[in-house]
Image 1 (cartoon, rainbow, N blue to C red):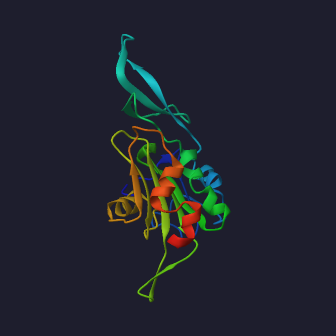
Image 2: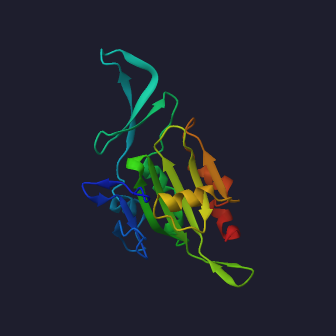
Image 3: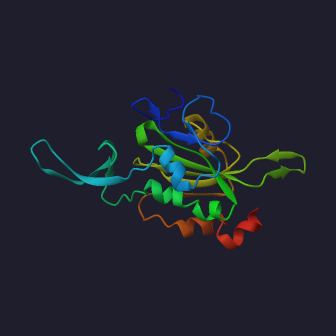
Length: 207
């Protein structure tokens, strides 16, 4: 399945506003949902925790932790002691000030590759004109990997992310407005907003 959308008991872990995705999966929602509401509709209201790993004989494996999902105790990956998870709620809350101000609307959200990648996408409520002619929709994408070796990425993109293919296209494109972070330090949303140039006082200037 090229879309890689996670299925749990036959239900796609995805929600979307607007046009139905090409694969026809997910829960259709109103465009005025809060970030936390669309997170819940997409089945992403779970956390990940690092748990101690042991050998079959009960000996603790030093320097390694199992990254376990709260919803079903599924081990998503094996990470190091200094790996800092970003919870889904943290990722979705990143959009809250913009949706409350009416600058953005939550648009799509979902889980890929069995929960190892979660994304949230908001549509900027203003279209940009290219050379004064072509109208281009702009989205703000937050990709949140629960996987060792993968970076958190927050960026503006013209691509509507609805699956693994479109996420890959967006992340592989050159972007002037993006911030990539590893998991070696705790996630600081204000720092990311400052680096993206979308701290509240700068957002009007960006638009």
